[in-house]
Length: 232
Image 1 (cartoon, rainbow, N blue to C red):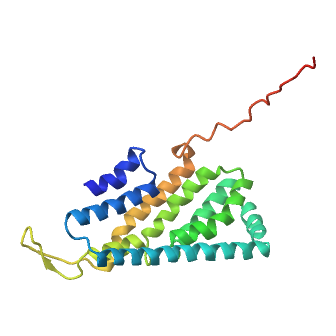
Image 2 (image 1 turned 90 degrees about the vertical axis):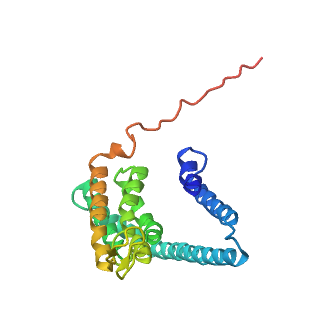
Image 3 (image 1 turned 180 degrees about the vertical axis):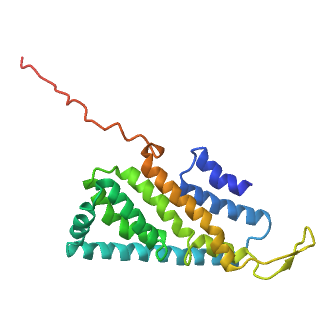
């Protein structure tokens, strides 16, 4: 409970941002391990080694996406994408439908990071050209890309559940009854309703943009202040 409060409680209370909440959780996990006398140098070394590897993976994705973006723009690929998506039938609505279908299909094979750092920079200029608010567009794509954690074959949520769910039948320690194991196919089929919920949320955000925020008020510049000095 203390660890949950350090992560989620500090975020909900406005004390920490989500990134800072992750740091609070890491510090809280270290403190709890120490209080329970399970903290040692080998465990700390293992945690630091895993964190360094994961951070390196993310950094190389960022480097690769940056290089790809530079090369793609050097051959005027961004202009080709802008002309292709900007002339879709249906205007902004047609663009949103095609883009969300594209992101949904690519999420079967690419992770959230790859989609965010490679695909989104190509779509944002087209959205701006069509008059779509980028904050709303970013939230819409984030909801869609969230499904990459749920669909097979590379959904991280499916892998997490597979790692903790028993494959073979086992005897429940509480009831003492024989309980059947969970197959990979059952995990995949169990994720289907949640994927459908994500798709329904995408459709609702497109149909009712006010769910994300009020973008009806435009930012206007204040009247310039004029100061006149009279010569004596």
